Image (cartoon, rainbow, N blue to C red; front, side, top):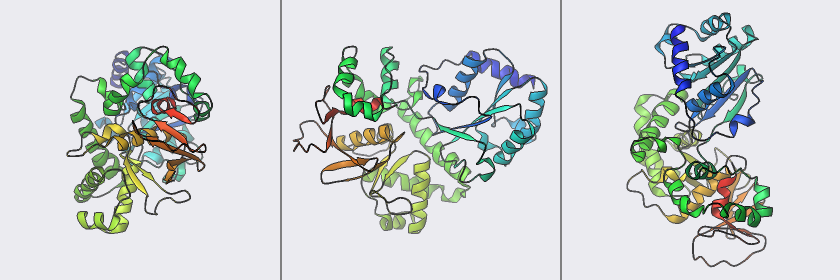
Length: 392
């Protein structure tokens, strides 16, 4: 047990989160079982350690453990939790819980047998905490940690402390909000960098970002999809090829029959793989209003703009990048559906948005919200694209 305390102390001491994530204040930390999901690379480990540092400091009543530790190949999580509680432990932070066989049953046993112990655990975005683990249904509170928003990236790069805005605030007060931000910084000077490398916190590391992102993308498929969905290793190449084909095809409706032929599997399997890639946050699936999986998507997009650049040879079209940025920013709290001839997308079933590239002629429809790329300041129903990066 002392080895775990030493590791915890070292990690907490050397944790320095460059941006305090808003999720820290959104979680009800009084709940006894809290699950924090998120795609690989968005900083779930740092988030746990930052919580320990902020709330507990050097207090040994809080302990961080990682299920990658070989100790857990021969010891149950319940036994460890009991030992920890006997030593005065109150909060157990468990990283990569899915690496433990029967992890959901173990969490349930800890919850039932150790009522004075609080557990916070991280897991992959691929995990369906409640749908696939009914034993946790009534006890776990689940949250999602996302990559950096454009606002968080801007705060990090400029030292500012801009807050997030709701969609309603942006729609009603975008001119006033943008003027307040523009008085302090020019967001367009930073937007292209964010599109290329700002979503994943590891851009701060002194390593080649594209290589690091490719490695992360491979891990999403090899671990988050294959391991969690218990797919045989021999199908790995098919899923990777599917992701590549979707990426090079660009943002459009998939030809499912053609994809099935190219990766030599059935249409149903292709649709399942597409769903897994979406769960892993590698792609976003856009449906017409009223439709959802397993219907054929009207568009498949990369999950965030950063993912569009390292796959070669992809011709990164400006419109695709802008639309990917918009959809990814919206996705946290809103539903995005296919648009029509007047709109690129419908948000929450009723709000039509049209994404406009620089120099594009606009036939002004008062019912449509025009999202303009190279515009610093909007007017009326014309809103600058960068401001939607402040939604979280």
